[in-house]
Length: 90
Image 1 (cartoon, rainbow, N blue to C red):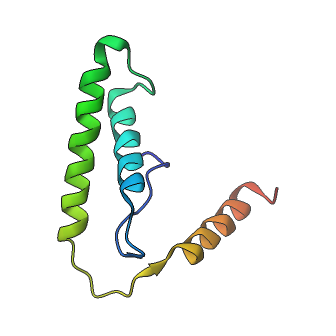
Image 2 (image 1 turned 45 degrees about the horizontal axis):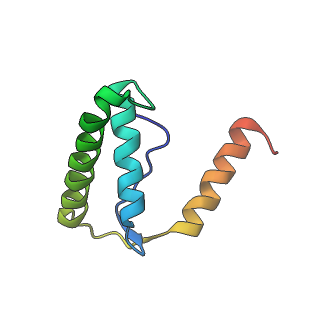
């Protein structure tokens, strides 16, 4: 899976439209093998992004969990710690 796609489920506050769309763009880029489609493929690329974003919204609204919501700041701090352990401090 593309490392730039982040977990969007079970956060407080919930994922924003921008986060959902960014994940959709990353997914379509990965699947298409293109970070920037040609003019001939732009419409197909945009349609795919919208379809994936809509599917993501439906999924996120449908998921149920008993776990308490995660805090974005705490998760970001954990990610920084993992990165420092893997690549060393900056």
